[in-house]
Amino acid sequence: MTLASYNGPPDAPVNAPVDAIVRLTDLTLGYRRHPAVHHLSGGFREGSLTAVVGPNGAGKSTLLKAVVGALKPFDGKVTLHGLTARDIGYLPQQAEVERDFPIDVLDTVLLGHWRRVGIFRAIGRTLTRQAEEALAAVGLAGFERRPIGALSAGQFQRVLFARLLVQDARLILLDEPFTAIDARTTADLLDVVRRWHGERRTVVAVLHDMEQVRAHFPDTLLLAREPVAWGRTDEALNPANLARARMMAEAWDDKAEVCRRSSS
Amino acid sequence: MTLFDLTAGPFLEFAFMRRALAACLALSLGCGPVGVLLVLRRMSLMGDAMSHAVLPGAAIGFLAAGLSLWAMGIGGFLAGLAVALLAGLVSRVTALREDASFAAFYLISLAGGVLIVSLRGSNVDLMHVLFGTILAVDDAGLLLVAGIATVTLLTLALLYRPMVLECFDSGFLRAVGGAGGRLGAACHLVFLVLVVLNLVGGFQALGTLMAVGLMMLPAASARFWAEGVVALALIAMGLAFASGIGGLLLSFHFNLPSGPAIVLAAGGGYLLSLTLGPVGSLRTRWFPGRHREA
Image 1 (cartoon, rainbow over the protein chains, first blue to last red):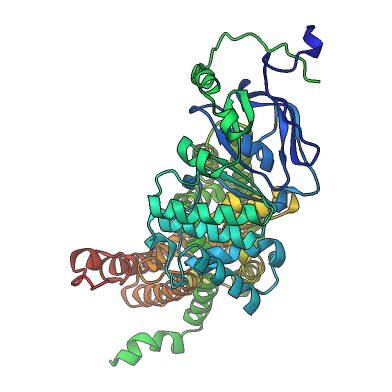
Image 2 (cartoon, rainbow over the protein chains, first blue to last red; image 1 turned 180 degrees about the vertical axis):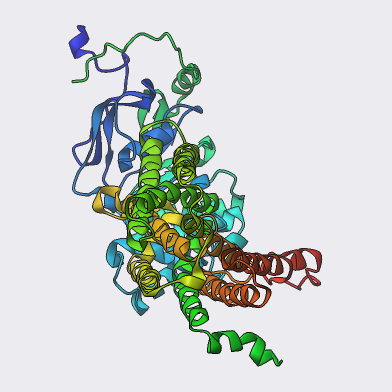
């Protein structure tokens, strides 16, 4: 094998379905020249429900940021098929929202209509009803006028899911949506995820709970900076793959050589 | 002497008091909502930094054209905007955070301003500029503050939705806002222009050192009275105007300088709100009332 034809570790998964809604081509992402995701190729099928798992620092959140276009790749590219960045519903890790902002629950959910109303258009009866239905769907009926500062972490996560419901996005990216969330809220929100899957939306979720992944997510991408496995969950999460993912060195090597793998 | 004579009398009797009152009203309308947005963005101290940054521009305007409202206004505006833009630029392209780069640039600007002022330190007119002349505000000055208030309110009404979202969840605005994710940055820029404009308006009336007082004190006080952005802005306007009236009367009856009197009145309003306000004040902390059933 010559360097030019080398495209990943020996048994790297090649997962590039023809009906991919997001295609990753030899994607390398990271910070300060150190890769967090290294030469990842593959695609998320339209309507698929995929868990992204791996040890801390494996590049899971970094991958989602690149898909929404918030991070410029070092190498390779992310291609969206038949949708633009605005068709993506993205739920980042919680810390990024101003939690003590004086805004109530309903207004927060109504923000999900942004693509339809923009800066100027009025939010009429229909759109308001949709937002109320979304709140009911996540179990928060009656919370419309509550300020978000008065919500628990779990309730606030329900609000953000309601906003995603209203957003009506074709591709939904969830970054650790159930971390520090109680079991009942997690179960309710997993129902919402299943509903999206039933509506043929494409869902990608970064998760840590392997039992949850095995129970609810048909596909899995196991990432440990290098892609370890990508495919059906039971195969991707077999003991051999999990052992390989655990061996990933978390620390940067400041003296690491410049990567010479070709970026085709 | 009746209460009416004490409160309404000075305004009925003297035209300069009525002018000062009108200037206070215009300032309150613009500074109230801008201050509220600054507080919500956790940029309260940035207003202070900006008011210092305005100084050298105003001083250069004074050196170039004498005590000309427009020369000093435009000079102050350009200096403030330059500091804001440079600080924003540095925080975007380097590792330095925006507050640190702000501090660096406003200190440079302030030192430059003090240097220029001290070259003409004996000039009484210039001291008026630095410490406020609301009791001597002329037609041009009134038009300027009223114009700034108008521009501020129209702009905020137009860009209300993205500006509030930029404070609340800027990541979401970047994702859904369109314009290549630059709508948030554009709003931020427009907002900084509004801050500088209102500070320039304020220094005509209160002096550069006091201008930020009428912006931040009522906005900080408003947080103890309401929840909701519009309510906060309305309350901040009301408190600012009340401070203006109170400060002018204090200044009239006790022969005090008007700028500090107005800002101290706003400070009194802040202490009162802090102690007695219904939302998260000391009163609600010390006397929360008995808990409810659910």
